[in-house]
Image (tube, rainbow, N blue to C red; front, side):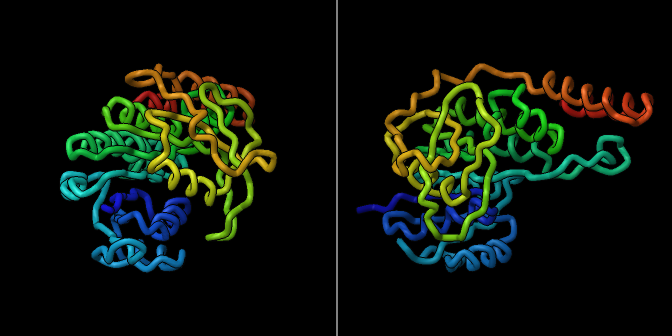
Length: 301
């Protein structure tokens, strides 16, 4: 029986490394990991208990690490000819630097709009062109609900990261490739390789609730199951619950509407949020106005 060939993008991150460990334990999968720094990725994966090599040794063997950068996709897109499913757990993770907003420090090259939006859009287009069958993407809760506190806070704290994750989701939806988009609430660490014993609840549509968490181990489990789940073109938010059945109810998920979801405006929500903080600040009115104007110009990009 031919193996399903999986490429993991973001496989050396805190969630991605757990996912790689799970996938490599599945004898029906052949696993590749994209990494800008293969040596660093190998060290991370070895800490997770999964040996890494420069070439695949088959099912259950060493994971193959492919050198590549999402910002230079043309250099490695050819490997997608031998990939059935892409799983992306990539995330920019940068905190907003006020000195960048004020123009006193150059902006990093890997800002969220570059990685989580443009990078994912390029990946989705390449997936379609090279015949990839499905994309499983981990984003974040609140991407479709800009007025939720989590979205406004994280957008302000992390260079509009939630906004750009939503843009990346939309690119996947428009690509025509089948997909499952997983939007976890707050991620928490648990012992590596140990099952949490917790169930997972889900919702679709508007974000509700804020005090919800989910273990990275369970997000990795969902990604593994999503490779072959019966759900098609579906997006959902998820969180742990001790009262839920551990078996995730994939067949209860509803598919997204055709094409992309209705666009939402994160800019207005963040502008209101920042203005409210500025109004309550003890800083001088001039300073607040200056920083706020620069932040608003930045978020409108």
